[in-house]
Image (tube, rainbow, N blue to C red; front, top):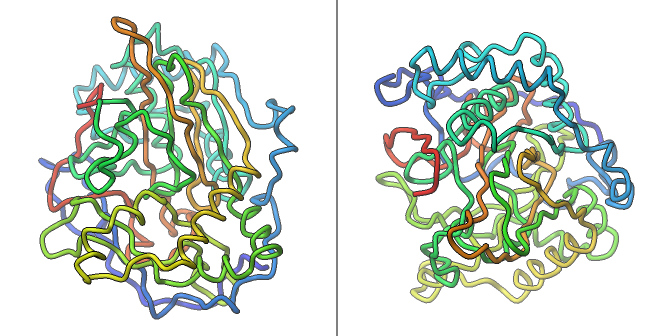
Length: 397
């Protein structure tokens, strides 16, 4: 498999170059949102590589007993630099949704964070920071420092129809069985292996659960190779654009309530990299459309493929526990992640709470080329409904 791209694709006019009102989008960039793939440039199964190689393919056994290979303990100097940048940003009066590298200066950390970004995009695809002082700083300063740090990895995008660019993974008592309406991160249910609608996802642990809520991650390229060897029939099904994904009502005017797409793609070009986009909750919540004959129901082959994919991910995964003050960053291009079901402490103890970032890395800034019309946009992906403004609340709502 060669990562080089040799084909030139038609240029889209990126929304990042279109004029957007800074009264709504303070940094002048609007989240692109969800889009169907460009079907005419999708590749068929016989064009996919027989095997993926390189650093994005990793075995959990190589990391289970070697946390020093994927963990970074923030030093006192690094914390002080983040603290000074957060205090300076607060004094500027700029809204949190307007934070950027330009107004959150990290002169010493910036080059190192650039190397972390490259490792996320083209290396093993994950890192765990430890020692972020959330209890000392509180939610407000922690959110500023966290989002400011995140701007060195990518452009933050909206995570839902409410415009949340700072998300909150927290049990709000919503019914996890109503999967056509409820986003699972707002419940305490298990989250199966999935990728989010952004290039990088960050999770900052503010409070832990009483039980459970632990993290599992897996190299989707290791999964790909395993399926290619053991279940090529399943992998072929996963490369076909026959999968409908629910948008759960988070749509702009005139858009369809679902997207037909594949699970595994190739980067556009002659020999691109294998990219994965998956969430089983979003394929199983569409019975309101399939029962009405609007879209086809999941076939037996699709149901089996979904089950085999989950089982394979679980078998090959790396388990980790996020402590208070830990930040996990993951690539969504070649890492799938999951969460165990959890139980919170009884009140008045705080509920499990993770602050979440979705970060975009456009192809013009070393991001992967994707078979979507917004591949070149700064804030590609995410969830954008019409002109809903970005918001960065300090807790779940």
